[in-house]
Length: 304
Image 1 (cartoon, helix red, strand yellow):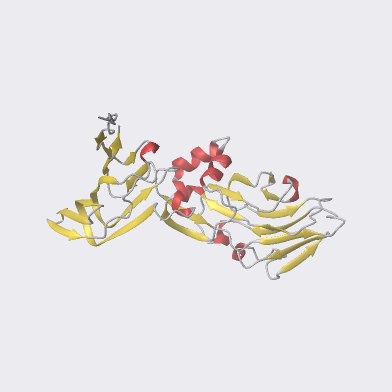
Image 2: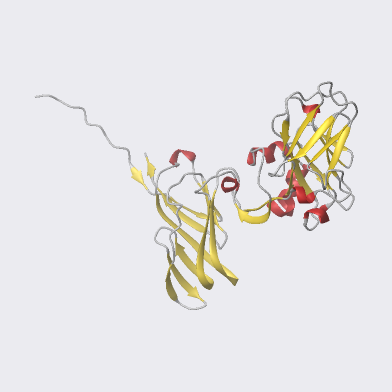
């Protein structure tokens, strides 16, 4: 009689975690959630539940990228023209709010810059203290394109600056530089106080590695113009399973929402059961899940 070894199966359990942000070990990524509920606890009431999931940054952000060619001030030489040439350098405005830049074969005969922003009033935003400014693609040498903000040069394509009424943003090329192939530059301005809140923004701004941290969250060379809407870092970067809004259809002060079934058990202002859409976050693709109405409670599958 043949003998076969007895293979034991790994043990199966369903650990539970609860809190403002539910975090998991990444080894469980991709496994289905056993349960997923969200508390609603609001004095003023809520009419929707925002649910986020993100491995990079476990909180909502108010996403904004404030630069557009409409930001160009009226006293700028490139405001009302598509192409401008000076000192052997040509600047061309593109439809996607970028610039194409190139020099004559002999290079730039002198420093040249065009003003592309002139204070927060020109970009339709309230004044905040911290901004992040980045660009560009296609640059092979740091000195080829530079930003100037209150005489602070940016040679790493990103810098933070305290802004006020005297803020000016310039895009320039240094004398003697030769850009043999046209390059495209995407100026971008982010209000990080609006994006992260004042406390986190100050932490990023004050950090010596703040630019590296920001670029780690937002690695793309170009983000479309938007003045601000709630989102998550992963959703901004293209994830389709990172941010969901579940509309309630009325104002609720207290209750528990079952994200897997869509059932909302309301206790305030009146006891009732509402059938809402379930939240598509049904598998643990990342290691943080949270909501803006109260604590989240999850059960996940654990093997072994």
